[in-house]
Image 1 (cartoon, helix red, strand yellow):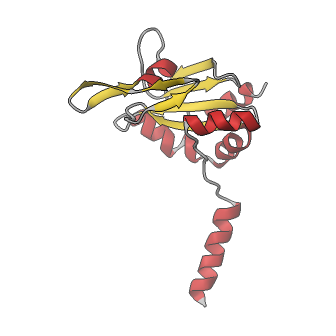
Image 2 (cartoon, rainbow, N blue to C red; image 1 turned 120 degrees about the vertical axis):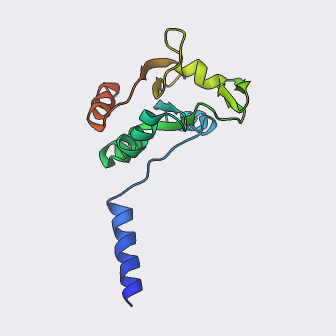
Image 3 (spheres, rainbow, N blue to C red; image 1 turned 45 degrees about the vertical axis):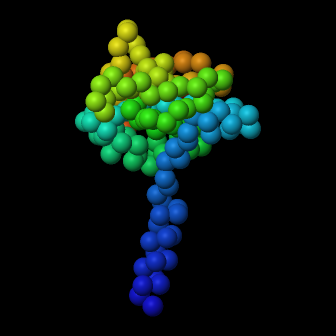
Length: 154
């Protein structure tokens, strides 16, 4: 009986108080655009980037941010070192190796390059036509990210 009660309590808390951030693929976001037009927010990161990991642990765990992203945007969590081919915007993007187990995905370069360089983490916002309308390459705290989301809604 105790286990059942704990299960119900846990399930009730997780289903009402704590929602998960819905991360889409590029292909999914493009298909969803056909149903409902929304801006796409792409979080471009790597596994070795400390600021990227910090953003994942703080900014993208914030319940207000999660709810806002899920409700009003298509969110893509994109590892810049992803090795699979990605079909997006009528083009196939591939991983570009640059050495032994080192490289970067063409799509990360396409969306994240600023001033001829790529610095992680990167936030790239695309409009409903998949055009870049905003890029930012640095850590964003939950407070600053909330302000960004508010400005994107205007």
